[in-house]
Image: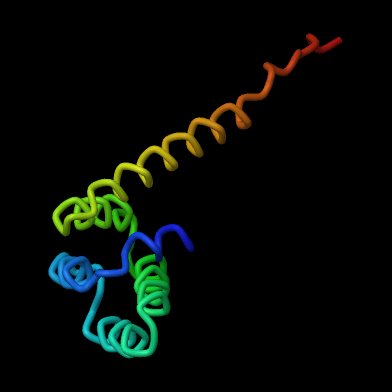
Length: 105
C-alpha cells in the first residue's frame, strides 16, 4: 500500500479515468478529493479503499487499464506481477495430495 501511494502521487488523471469507467461514483470522488486536499497519500488510500469497496469483480482489471492509460504503466506491471506470483503461490498451496481411498469391506 505504501509503495503504491508513493508511486501514485500525481493521481488526478487516474481518479478521473476510474470515474469514467464507473468504478468511482460522485460520492467516492468527493471523499477522495477531500482526502487529497489534506494529504496526497491519504487521497490515494481513500481511492484504493473505494476501489476495493465498490469496484466489483472486474475492478482490478479496470484499475490496471486505468493505470496504463494514466501514465502509470510501471505500477500496473508491478501489480500484475505481484498478482501472478500470489495466484501461483495460492495454487501451489491448494494442491493437496490425492486422498487414498480404501475399498469398502
